[in-house]
Amino acid sequence: MSLAVGRAGAARLPLGLSVALLLIAIAGGALFSLVTGGRSDIGLAAIFKGDATSAAVIRDIRAPRSLAAALIGINLGLAGLALQAVTRNPLASPSILGINQGAAFGLALALIAPHAVPLPLDGMAMLGALAAGILTFAIAGGFAGRIDAMRLILGGVAVGAFSYALVRFAYTLEDELARSVVRWTVGDITDIRWPPVLRMAFWTVSGVIVAMLAAHRFNLMAMGQDVAKSLGADPRVTLLIGMLLAAGLTGAAVSVAGPIAFAGLIVPHMAKLLFGQDHRILVPTTALLGAALMLVADGMSKVVSPPVEVPVGVVVALIGAPWFLLQTLLAEDLE
Amino acid sequence: MSIRLTDIRAGYDAFRLNDVSVEMRAGMITALIGPNGCGKSTLLKSAARHLDPGPGRVEIAGQDIARIGRRRIARIVSLLPQHPVVPPAISVRDLVAYGRAPHQNLFGFRSAADDRKVDEALDLVELDILRERPVASLSGGQRQRAFVAMCVAQDAPYMLFDEPTSSLDIKYQYEVLDLLRALKSAGKTVVVVLHDIEQAARYADELVVMKDGSFLRRGAPADVVTREMVREVFGIEAKVFPDPNTGTPLISPRDRMSDGAATAARPGCETGRATETVATSKT
Image (cartoon, rainbow over all chains, first blue to last red):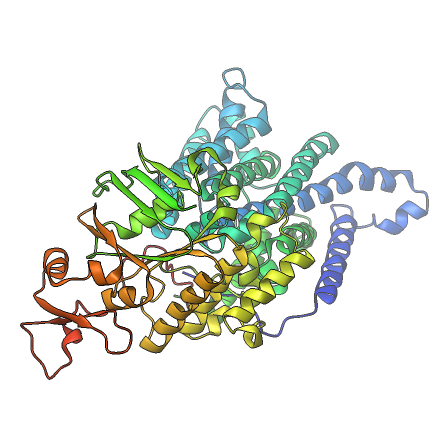
């Protein structure tokens, strides 16, 4: 089960060049995401001409949306990275372990019965993500100290399917309610405004800090539970940190954009291909790569079939699935 | 200054140690021997608190290790598990450097002192010229030496090894055993689980014999490895005689005569339980 990428000794780009390319990708993605939109006549140039409408569109509609896309990319990428590290399973990601769907279920609950649940939308999404993650890890045997790779994936698929079935059940409820559940869970960031984006930015920044602090623990975990323990890092603590991190980041992303699949799976793999296996480097680079991917996807979602927008989650899957397949086929030792 | 285990009842659902009490003396190589499933690995793991000793106590150099945190334990005692995982795409040097983790800050950045310890460890196992190579590209013997070097870099005074020679060719088995002897000369206390009684007798100062989860006997190899012990513990009738080279006991099973190659009648190339080798070995 090892999707071997970034082998030591294999030809890899120098670190400086890779980082430079990454920054260019982010800048390009941000620009792409900002200049595209429903009104094709509005570009960045319009701002400098002092056109008030254009400036308002960019400031109030496009900028929060672009930032939201970038933050979602960071969250999902880091969540996937953390899950892959603590489970030592290359297939681990928020959607495959059911965490994405658990978050959507928590969100749906908050929408259906806002007075019966203890937390606001993003809190409920995180709670749902956490519950799904705990369930999947318990099925895989993680809390007894040994994660079974097959049971992890099977458990995740089952938990995910069950949670999402409950979300879809909400679609059959009264029309008004069903519409809001659909709108929140389909993976769409078209009409997002500043307040939720800023709230999400808080979670993203917190998550990046925690991930940086845990990066070396993640490295030790790659040595296996036994060696990690001998080296003084209790694997159960690492597992707990990874799961809380993944649940928090995924919940925050899902509460803004619904469950977007694939980003959490492929972004860490892309980062490992470019930057190797050291999590102290992978945490920041995965975050940047996730942001770049989502910005490009957001831009593309607006230009693929104008004037209709394709939900950004669909674009991510359209980019991600072929890429993942390619990497799988090219991996030297897929066992 | 020893490892003193008292009433250890560690184990799993199906198997528990029967209140094992034993001491492993400082500055020596102690080998744990016994048939498969007798609990020697379980005892070793409890000594490093990888397993909960139940109501028992583990004291290392007079200190009860139940009272101290995992990082501090890791500075006192290292344990090389039986089939360590090789992480993908890691170089020999980086692997050995992980041994410094218990001495480093949260981020694990290496200090000059860390680099020195890593270099020393690489020199000791003679892997300094392969330091940039991926661990996955090494031979079995080199790979095991790299893991020993990781433990050396960890620089704990008490070093435990769980069947470090298993699944190695005979040449590399002796290479690893010679390394353990070098560690003892460097002042370390070494405790090792070994499958091969003759190798254990040859390299250890003291043997600890276990059977069915219980401690049976402890003592110098020549005193412990006797005809009676081999019959009682391993269930074979054998002649025991001193090795012409070393004087340590050799075992020649009686009833399966095949032109002198008597040792071939041993249980064979048993590799033990591989619980955590999730296919990362060939990356």
